[in-house]
Every structure is written in structure tokens, then in C-alpha cells.
Length: 512
Ligand SMILES: Cc1cc2nc3c(=O)[nH]c(=O)nc-3n(C[C@H](O)[C@H](O)[C@H](O)COP(=O)(O)OP(=O)(O)OC[C@H]3O[C@@H](n4cnc5c(N)ncnc54)[C@H](O)[C@@H]3O)c2cc1C
Ligand SMILES: NC(=O)c1ccc[n+]([C@@H]2O[C@H](COP(=O)([O-])OP(=O)(O)OC[C@H]3O[C@@H](n4cnc5c(N)ncnc54)[C@H](OP(=O)(O)O)[C@@H]3O)[C@@H](O)[C@H]2O)c1
Image (cartoon, helix red, strand yellow):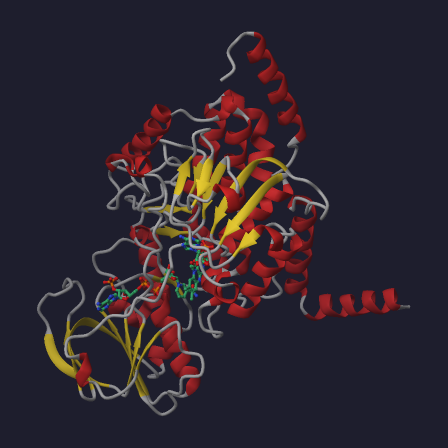
């Protein structure tokens, strides 16, 4: 009876919300086919052993992939559990939400979203549920910032010089993210301002009803703060932005299409999407579209309501530079479109009762890695596939060297990078050599030499996929691993071949 009731309610849901039903069903299938099985609680996992630094979605997903494929891990999280598990999503406002569609934010195959644009709470829940599902609780240490990663005399990695407590490792996944502590700035004469100043990540419970709100910064957090202020019924909202960024619609097809630029940078054809965006999206608000900055140079903001709110007179978007804080506002130099930061304009006071600093986050440091991986010409993000330092591919810094992209941090590539690392660790013939990794970096620089950004300072998702295909094909010893690298499947076969190869090399005296 219960089964029939459930089937009927499912049917009713499918009729009422056909798209949501298809999306949920699709995720069930993806999870079934591509999720590695969590290890049984009693299972003793084999070496190699991986140290994962950071318990945000990248660290948790990477660790889940490792244990799902039989590799042991230890996760080191610098913050206490409440603030660390889930990473940045444990430390932002409850009103924050994904700007891109959640289909582009499936950070692990077992993730199941029930909405297109999940909120902070749902995102954190999904991270925690992957962590629990893969038995990572007993493999995580909180409140343990990693300060050093060194090799011991046997050539194995040790963390914080503490071999006794943590043991040794064969591989390192640095998943420290790109958003650390809030970046608060001090305005000239800030002390004169008589109202409160908050950071954009600390808005929960802040009362701005009926107030004039000044938002400083012109990034994704500024848009979120603007939405928060509109929702709370602020009287006036002014965003004071010193540099222009592109805004693209919150539309999954448009966003995927833009991420499909395989060149991973500006090309002579970039005027086409830029023209479409100005003509059909910005329309009468073309003045706030960037004048001298291509779409493929900087991470765009994804939002479809911003322009409606500006058109409805709920908020203003002002371009210019802050001169100083005043008792009841900010003295601001308004610049015209195309005039660079610090250029000429006209000064006027913008009144406000509250300042929200949407000035971003400090970047977490990866300088705990050994000095040799910071060689000047090949320092991050100029690494093999952007994440493997050419001096040592047993280190993988997924999502930690990222600067700008059209794509997403929380997607399919986390699994691919993890599996590449696992392959390098278990199959010496697939492991790239330092000169070849440097050659690949130089080749990518050459291919992108006409792009306005440096080769690794901006990429698109299509470019990432092209990188993976290229490096999988270029070395014949990696061919047997292709289904594993891309889909996490058929590990057994290449593992058996590797054993045979090892035996053959030992017989011929060619083993390492
Ligand atoms: C409000 C907001 C909304 C966002 N929305 C999107 C979006 O829609 N799409 C998108 O792609 N991205 C978005 N981002 C970017 C966001 O960074 C990623 O979504 C994602 O959370 C990154 O996950 P991560 O695990 O790589 O890093 P984090 O979530 O930052 O986790 C890194 C963890 O590493 C820990 N750590 C750092 N240094 C050390 C150390 N030395 N030792 C031990 N532990 C350490 C930190 O404490 C932290 O818990 C958003 C960011 C914010 C702030
Ligand atoms: N839901 C979402 O998708 C969402 C929401 C929030 C954040 N995020 C992500 O989180 C990351 C951080 O975003 P963010 O918006 O917090 O930070 P951000 O992108 O770094 O933007 C910070 C803004 O503050 C400005 N700024 C910095 N210092 C300033 C100063 N001294 N005076 C005046 N302006 C100053 C910057 O101007 P300059 O550019 O000139 O330096 C920039 O406009 C990004 O990756 C973003 O995509 C995503």
C-alpha cells in the first residue's frame, strides 16, 4: 500500500512539475552510474594515502572520490567543524544562493539538488551528506591549519612536521579554495561615518529596513547585498563600483553556451556574445556594461534580476572612486563609461546610513607547499593543467589556483583531477615528467598568446575538457585509464595491466 501511495505521489509530482521531475530523475541516474561506492565501515583502505587540505566542497568531494576508489585519506581543516565543514558555504549569509544553475554545480556524482538555484543551507547540507556518506568523519581533523608539507627521509609527505600523529602520505590535495577571511577595507576618514559598516558575508539579522544603504564593490557579493537590501525594504540602495564587470543572465543554456568557448579566452569572435548581451540583456542599461573589457577576461556575474531592480528605481549602480567617508555618506568621484579607475569625473556626496563592504575575501595561502613548486616561471596558476606543479605531480591543488573563468568551481572537474592524481600515483608510466609538463605549460601559453589575459589567468569549461582530452591522448600508457579518468569507471582493468607492467619492468631491471 505504501509503495502504491509513493508511486501515486511521484506521478502527481511529475505531472505538476515535469521539468523538476526530469532533473531529479536524471540526478538519480547520474548518482547510480557514476558514484563510487562508499567503503564499508570495517574496510581497511589501501595505500597510496592522500592528505586532503580543506573541508570545503572541493576537499570533501576529492576525499570521497579517493576512498570510493579504495585510497585512504586524511582531511586537514584549519577551522573548527561548524565553520570549516562546507568551507565558505558555512560562513556566508543564509540568504546566499548559487547564481549559476545547480546542474553546473554537481561537485560529486552523488549530489542531489532539488532546485535549480539552491540556497546556502542546501549547499552545506549536500557537502555534509557526501562527507557522512563516504565515512569521512573519522578521517577528518578540524582546527588543524596546515602550515607545512614536507617529504621525510623516505620520500613520503608529512604534514606540519607531525609524522607521529598524522602518519605519512603519498599524495597531497590542496583544496583551500579562493575565498578566505572577509576582506574589510578602511575608507579614508572612515571614522567620520556615523552609521554601521558590515561585510557582505555578515548580513544575517542586520536591519536595513527604511535605511539608505551604500554597497562598496562591484562583484557578485555586491549584487547579493543589493538583493538583501531590496528584500529587507531599504529606502535607497547605491552600489559604488570602481571597476566594470560583465553580468550574464541566470539562464542555464546561455551560461553553458558561453562556457563552450574552447579557446578559453577572448578571440576575434567575442564581439558576438558581447553584442547580444548589450542588445538583449543590458538594453537601456548599456552604460554599465564594461567598455574596454572583453567578456572572456574576468569571471562574469550571473544575475537576471539586477537590471530589473535598477529599472524599477530600487537601486542605482554608480561607477567611480571613493574619495572619503563623510558623516552621512561617501564623497564619490563619478566616472563616465570607459574612464579608467582613478580617472577624471565629477565629485558628489552619496548619502547613506549603512555601509556594506562587498569587497571580497582574502585569498587562502598555499605557501605551506614546498618552496620548489613556486619556481618563478612556473608558479601557480602556471601549473600543469593549472593544478599540478611541474616539479611534483603528486600534489594537486584543485580549485586553489583558480583566478577567473567562465565555468564553475563545483563541478565534474573535481573528480577528474582527483582521478588523474590517483593514476599518477599508482601507474608510474602515466606520470608526467617535469620537462614535458613545462612544455605543456609553454604550449598553452603559446596557443593563448593573443588573449588579453595571461594563459592561466582565465579559462572556460570547454578549454578544461580539451586539456583533459589532450593529456589523456598524448601518452599511450594513459589510454587504458580513460574511462577511469573521465567517468571513474573500470579501475580494475588498468590496475591489472599496471601490475603486469611493474612485473615486466622488475624482470628487466627497469623498476624505479
Ligand atoms: C557567497 C558566495 C557564493 C558563491 N557562489 C558560487 C557559485 O555560484 N558558483 C561557483 O562556482 N562558485 C561560487 N562561489 C565560490 C566558492 O568559492 C565555491 O563555490 C566553493 O565553495 C569553493 O569550494 P572549495 O572547497 O574549493 O573552497 P572553500 O569552500 O573556501 O573551502 C576551503 C577550506 O579550506 C580550509 N583551509 C584553508 N587553508 C587551510 C590550511 N592551510 N589548512 C587547513 N585548512 C585550510 C578553509 O578553512 C576552508 O574550509 C561562491 C562564493 C561565495 C562567497
Ligand atoms: N552567489 C554567487 O555566485 C556569488 C556570490 C558572492 C560571491 N561569489 C564568488 O565569490 C568570490 C568573491 O566575490 P566578491 O564579490 O565577494 O569579491 P570580488 O569579486 O573580489 O569583488 C570585490 C569588489 O570590491 C571592489 N573593491 C575591493 N577593494 C576595494 C576598495 N579598496 N575600494 C573600492 N572597491 C574595492 C573590487 O574592485 P576591483 O575589481 O577594482 O578590485 C570588486 O569590485 C568570486 O569568486 C565570486 O564569483 C559568488
